[in-house]
Length: 223
Image 1 (cartoon, rainbow, N blue to C red):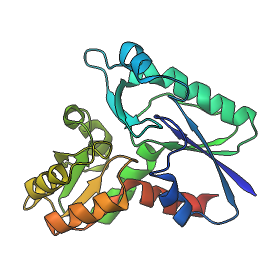
Image 2 (image 1 turned 120 degrees about the vertical axis):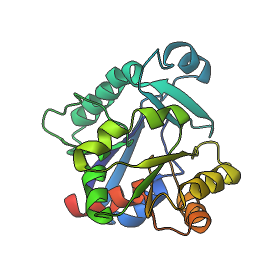
Image 3 (image 1 turned 90 degrees about the vertical axis):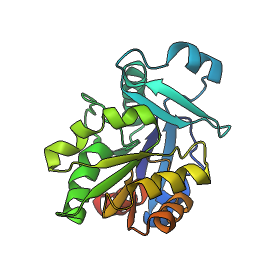
């Protein structure tokens, strides 16, 4: 079988997202999961991995289903270590299960698949000249997203609703707030589910792109 390493910035296994990936990946692909926060307590994460001032904030899911917020500068060295460990296990294809931007990540010989390199240009091709709305998990992420999209000619409007603290009202409010300002929406986090996509589509009346589904479809053609 072909091995696909899947690294979440939370804790593995990702029982929320893995089924979406599995639905689109060929049966011959063996998915091996690992998490940046594996083995770490919520108390340790709160004490050591919180975002500093002006840090790039990220959020993910613990094995308990709880959500945590982390700073990119704190977790990137651990993420690189997880990539190295996957390579040492002979995993030739490694998917980062996060849409965040991590400058400088590297693999020696494995193919490292980073969604932030793939999703913006793919979305641009899908959106064309239409207006893009992006829903993100954290309010503070609205200030850090433009650098990911603007190089591709995208200038999104933003809404906020977390996939890890699932509040139907939040999704409905975010979708309603983008109605009339956007023609197509993107759920910009690998933690959003099909339920979130349907809820957002119903509330906005717009097409909604699910980040993990589009990555699964693309990866299925790459390996």
